[in-house]
Amino acid sequence: MEVTWWGHATCTVEDSGVRVLTDPLFVRRLAHLRRRRGALPPREAARADAVVVSHLHADHLHLPSLARLAPGTSLIVPRGATRAVPGLRRLGGLRITEVGPGDEVVVGHLVVRAVPALHDGRRLPVGPHRSPALGYVVSGEARTYFAGDTGLFEGMADAVGEVEVALLPVGGWGPFLGHGHLDARRAAQALAALRPRAAVPVHYGTYWPIGLDGVRPHEFHAPGDEFVRQAARLAPGVRVHRLGHGERVRPEVRP
Image (cartoon, rainbow, N blue to C red; front, side, top):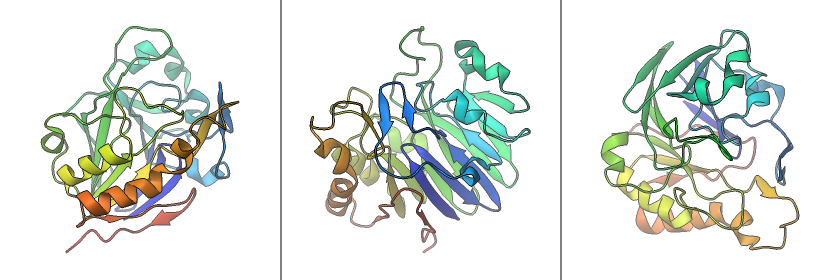
């Protein structure tokens, strides 16, 4: 199996000949955020058999990026998403499936299982709390956990189950992380609980608010390296692959 990190929370997981794309975001600017590192993902990044969306925030459920998907692509979203985000219904040709924690979707030779996340699932800045925030476990030759956005929560390891690869958020897009996020240290604590064979840090070092370049810049640049250091201390048996934008890795997932 192979993992490619395109930036922010956008990854391609290729397993058993099936391509799963996570939280696609393919733009240089989103509202007050600007892409500060890494070229925009190439056209091939939108090629997928299935796409998983972790929650409804615009940097994770981005309609113009989803519009680049080929007709017939399976789009897996949190339960209630099509009601909360009517624009999803106008994405022609996509096969949309709404899921909640514990639900499974078969995609080719893979099984995609939704798992809980501790995060605000609303479509901000307005809207009631209609949809859960989710992570996903993609099971094929390996079991790969994409955490989406989440904080640490009790029973996290039990909810996720046994996995070989973990794609964990280790930062954010601004100088301060709010409730329901993992920083590098908390991500390493999650790693120690999950105990995969390999991990890839994501959701950092890509987007940053315009005009805030000088405000806590280490929160933009440092989370990947800090996660490597913290993981070595708290989860020394896990191999961490700190990828650059557009880089890929084939983690060693078997003993």
